[in-house]
Length: 127
Image (tube, rainbow, N blue to C red; front, side):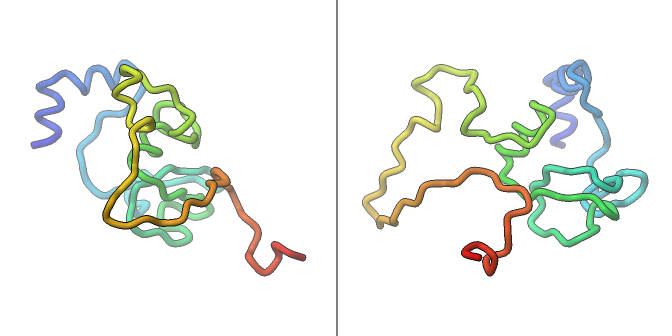
């Protein structure tokens, strides 16, 4: 249903022209099935809700991320920070500029250190 609707809207042609593959939906890369798997040292942006070593290919590295982060990785060809990616719509519509204040509850805000690949284990942080 989703694939057909996307094809009816011409999205398949847009993605193919941009260099993407247009394939049948299903499990393959999500669990290294068929030839769809990471090679050793390759990295993958994934929106999967689970991960373990070797899940997407022996020796590969899977980075779990939100759909928006995965989309930015796909478009930019590298793991990227969606907050630093240019918004292509009107500035007034950019969701990053919208207030996230809530009158339901408040939480303490901590600065985000940004993406970290291979962070040190917590027991070595103060060594």
